[in-house]
Image (cartoon, rainbow, N blue to C red; front, side, top):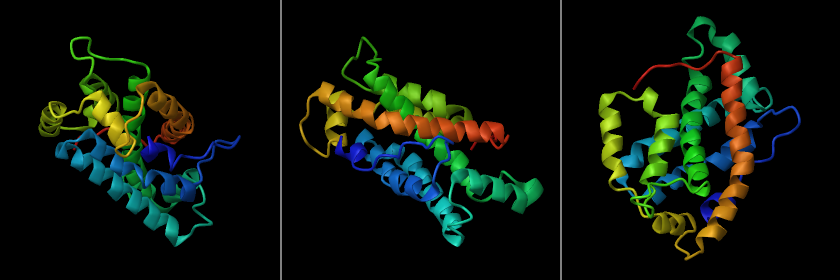
Length: 209
Protein backbone atom coordinates (compact mmCIF):
# COMPACT_ATOMS: atom_id res chain seq x y z
CA UNK A 1 0.00 0.00 0.00
CA UNK A 2 3.09 2.14 0.28
CA UNK A 3 2.84 2.88 -3.43
CA UNK A 4 -0.36 4.85 -2.83
CA UNK A 5 0.09 6.25 0.66
CA UNK A 6 3.54 7.80 0.13
CA UNK A 7 2.27 10.24 -2.51
CA UNK A 8 -1.28 11.24 -1.68
CA UNK A 9 -3.17 14.09 -3.27
CA UNK A 10 -3.89 17.11 -1.12
CA UNK A 11 -7.26 17.85 0.39
CA UNK A 12 -9.09 20.31 -1.84
CA UNK A 13 -9.60 23.84 -0.54
CA UNK A 14 -13.06 25.34 -0.09
CA UNK A 15 -13.10 26.73 -3.65
CA UNK A 16 -12.20 23.24 -5.02
CA UNK A 17 -9.33 24.62 -7.09
CA UNK A 18 -6.76 21.92 -7.92
CA UNK A 19 -3.22 23.29 -7.54
CA UNK A 20 -1.16 22.18 -10.51
CA UNK A 21 2.26 21.58 -8.97
CA UNK A 22 1.25 19.33 -6.03
CA UNK A 23 -1.24 17.54 -8.29
CA UNK A 24 1.46 16.70 -10.83
CA UNK A 25 3.92 15.69 -8.11
CA UNK A 26 1.42 13.24 -6.63
CA UNK A 27 0.13 11.68 -9.86
CA UNK A 28 3.63 11.33 -11.31
CA UNK A 29 4.04 8.25 -9.09
CA UNK A 30 0.84 6.57 -10.28
CA UNK A 31 2.07 5.02 -13.55
CA UNK A 32 3.81 2.41 -11.37
CA UNK A 33 0.32 1.35 -10.26
CA UNK A 34 -0.07 -0.48 -13.57
CA UNK A 35 3.02 -2.58 -12.88
CA UNK A 36 1.06 -4.06 -9.97
CA UNK A 37 -1.50 -5.43 -12.43
CA UNK A 38 1.19 -7.75 -13.68
CA UNK A 39 0.56 -7.70 -17.43
CA UNK A 40 2.62 -5.80 -19.98
CA UNK A 41 -0.64 -5.29 -21.89
CA UNK A 42 -1.41 -2.53 -19.40
CA UNK A 43 1.79 -0.77 -20.50
CA UNK A 44 0.00 1.48 -23.04
CA UNK A 45 -2.26 2.91 -20.31
CA UNK A 46 0.80 3.44 -18.11
CA UNK A 47 2.67 5.16 -20.95
CA UNK A 48 -0.37 7.30 -21.78
CA UNK A 49 -0.63 8.55 -18.21
CA UNK A 50 3.09 9.30 -18.04
CA UNK A 51 3.02 11.12 -21.36
CA UNK A 52 0.05 13.27 -20.42
CA UNK A 53 1.60 14.22 -17.08
CA UNK A 54 4.73 15.32 -18.97
CA UNK A 55 2.66 17.44 -21.38
CA UNK A 56 0.79 19.20 -18.59
CA UNK A 57 4.01 19.85 -16.68
CA UNK A 58 5.61 21.35 -19.80
CA UNK A 59 2.79 23.88 -20.03
CA UNK A 60 2.84 24.59 -16.29
CA UNK A 61 6.59 25.21 -16.32
CA UNK A 62 6.23 27.98 -18.90
CA UNK A 63 4.38 30.15 -16.36
CA UNK A 64 3.83 28.62 -12.88
CA UNK A 65 2.08 31.75 -11.62
CA UNK A 66 -0.39 31.97 -14.48
CA UNK A 67 -1.02 28.22 -14.40
CA UNK A 68 -1.15 27.78 -10.63
CA UNK A 69 -4.33 25.67 -10.84
CA UNK A 70 -5.65 23.21 -13.40
CA UNK A 71 -8.70 25.41 -13.84
CA UNK A 72 -6.47 28.35 -14.79
CA UNK A 73 -4.71 26.23 -17.41
CA UNK A 74 -7.97 25.28 -19.10
CA UNK A 75 -9.34 28.81 -19.05
CA UNK A 76 -6.08 30.29 -20.38
CA UNK A 77 -5.82 27.73 -23.17
CA UNK A 78 -9.43 28.34 -24.17
CA UNK A 79 -8.48 31.96 -24.84
CA UNK A 80 -5.11 31.09 -26.43
CA UNK A 81 -6.30 28.47 -28.91
CA UNK A 82 -9.78 29.65 -29.84
CA UNK A 83 -11.61 27.19 -32.09
CA UNK A 84 -8.84 24.57 -31.79
CA UNK A 85 -9.57 24.23 -28.07
CA UNK A 86 -10.04 21.80 -26.31
CA UNK A 87 -8.28 19.42 -28.72
CA UNK A 88 -4.88 20.95 -27.93
CA UNK A 89 -2.27 21.55 -25.25
CA UNK A 90 -2.55 20.65 -21.60
CA UNK A 91 -6.35 20.63 -21.91
CA UNK A 92 -6.24 17.57 -24.16
CA UNK A 93 -3.55 15.91 -22.03
CA UNK A 94 -5.56 16.40 -18.83
CA UNK A 95 -8.69 15.10 -20.55
CA UNK A 96 -6.99 11.75 -21.15
CA UNK A 97 -5.15 11.78 -17.83
CA UNK A 98 -8.38 12.12 -15.87
CA UNK A 99 -9.68 8.97 -17.60
CA UNK A 100 -6.63 7.02 -16.51
CA UNK A 101 -7.08 8.34 -12.98
CA UNK A 102 -10.76 7.36 -13.10
CA UNK A 103 -9.67 3.81 -13.99
CA UNK A 104 -7.56 3.68 -10.82
CA UNK A 105 -10.34 5.26 -8.75
CA UNK A 106 -13.05 2.83 -9.86
CA UNK A 107 -10.79 -0.22 -9.56
CA UNK A 108 -9.74 0.58 -6.01
CA UNK A 109 -13.26 1.56 -4.92
CA UNK A 110 -14.65 -1.66 -6.37
CA UNK A 111 -12.07 -3.67 -4.42
CA UNK A 112 -12.79 -2.05 -1.06
CA UNK A 113 -16.53 -2.39 -1.72
CA UNK A 114 -15.83 -6.14 -1.98
CA UNK A 115 -17.35 -6.42 -5.44
CA UNK A 116 -16.29 -9.70 -7.03
CA UNK A 117 -17.05 -12.60 -9.29
CA UNK A 118 -18.39 -15.24 -6.91
CA UNK A 119 -17.05 -17.97 -9.20
CA UNK A 120 -13.53 -16.48 -9.00
CA UNK A 121 -13.51 -14.49 -5.75
CA UNK A 122 -9.72 -14.41 -5.48
CA UNK A 123 -9.21 -12.71 -8.83
CA UNK A 124 -9.53 -8.97 -9.53
CA UNK A 125 -10.72 -9.52 -13.09
CA UNK A 126 -14.23 -8.30 -12.18
CA UNK A 127 -12.89 -5.09 -10.63
CA UNK A 128 -10.52 -4.34 -13.51
CA UNK A 129 -13.32 -4.89 -16.04
CA UNK A 130 -15.62 -2.51 -14.19
CA UNK A 131 -12.90 0.12 -14.02
CA UNK A 132 -12.22 -0.17 -17.74
CA UNK A 133 -15.90 -0.09 -18.69
CA UNK A 134 -16.51 3.06 -16.64
CA UNK A 135 -13.39 5.02 -17.57
CA UNK A 136 -11.89 4.04 -20.93
CA UNK A 137 -13.88 1.53 -22.97
CA UNK A 138 -16.10 4.05 -24.77
CA UNK A 139 -13.01 5.91 -26.01
CA UNK A 140 -11.26 2.83 -27.39
CA UNK A 141 -11.78 1.29 -30.80
CA UNK A 142 -12.34 -2.41 -31.40
CA UNK A 143 -8.65 -3.34 -31.55
CA UNK A 144 -7.74 -1.67 -28.26
CA UNK A 145 -10.76 -3.25 -26.59
CA UNK A 146 -9.61 -6.69 -27.73
CA UNK A 147 -6.16 -6.07 -26.30
CA UNK A 148 -7.74 -5.20 -23.00
CA UNK A 149 -9.81 -8.39 -23.00
CA UNK A 150 -6.58 -10.33 -23.44
CA UNK A 151 -5.06 -8.46 -20.50
CA UNK A 152 -7.89 -9.62 -18.25
CA UNK A 153 -6.66 -13.19 -18.40
CA UNK A 154 -3.36 -12.02 -16.95
CA UNK A 155 -4.98 -10.07 -14.12
CA UNK A 156 -3.33 -11.09 -10.83
CA UNK A 157 -4.83 -12.71 -7.78
CA UNK A 158 -6.13 -10.17 -5.28
CA UNK A 159 -3.50 -11.12 -2.70
CA UNK A 160 -0.69 -10.69 -5.24
CA UNK A 161 -2.06 -7.31 -6.34
CA UNK A 162 -2.29 -6.04 -2.76
CA UNK A 163 1.22 -7.32 -2.05
CA UNK A 164 2.52 -5.48 -5.13
CA UNK A 165 0.82 -2.27 -3.94
CA UNK A 166 2.59 -2.79 -0.62
CA UNK A 167 5.94 -3.06 -2.41
CA UNK A 168 6.35 -6.76 -1.72
CA UNK A 169 5.29 -6.75 1.93
CA UNK A 170 2.83 -9.37 3.14
CA UNK A 171 -0.11 -7.46 4.60
CA UNK A 172 -3.56 -8.33 5.81
CA UNK A 173 -6.33 -7.64 3.31
CA UNK A 174 -8.40 -5.49 5.66
CA UNK A 175 -5.34 -3.46 6.62
CA UNK A 176 -4.73 -2.81 2.93
CA UNK A 177 -8.35 -1.89 2.30
CA UNK A 178 -8.24 0.54 5.21
CA UNK A 179 -5.32 2.38 3.63
CA UNK A 180 -6.95 2.34 0.19
CA UNK A 181 -10.06 3.97 1.67
CA UNK A 182 -7.90 6.72 3.18
CA UNK A 183 -6.09 7.22 -0.12
CA UNK A 184 -9.38 7.45 -2.02
CA UNK A 185 -10.74 10.34 0.06
CA UNK A 186 -8.62 13.08 -1.55
CA UNK A 187 -7.98 11.12 -4.76
CA UNK A 188 -11.67 10.66 -5.57
CA UNK A 189 -12.51 14.24 -4.63
CA UNK A 190 -9.81 15.52 -7.00
CA UNK A 191 -10.73 13.24 -9.90
CA UNK A 192 -14.43 14.08 -9.52
CA UNK A 193 -13.62 17.81 -9.43
CA UNK A 194 -11.61 17.56 -12.67
CA UNK A 195 -14.52 15.77 -14.34
CA UNK A 196 -16.91 18.49 -13.12
CA UNK A 197 -14.57 21.15 -14.48
CA UNK A 198 -14.55 19.57 -17.94
CA UNK A 199 -18.33 19.27 -17.88
CA UNK A 200 -18.84 22.91 -16.91
CA UNK A 201 -16.40 24.14 -19.57
CA UNK A 202 -17.80 21.73 -22.18
CA UNK A 203 -14.21 20.58 -22.73
CA UNK A 204 -14.69 16.81 -22.94
CA UNK A 205 -14.30 15.16 -26.34
CA UNK A 206 -15.97 11.89 -27.26
CA UNK A 207 -13.80 10.22 -29.90
CA UNK A 208 -12.12 6.82 -30.12
CA UNK A 209 -8.47 5.90 -30.40
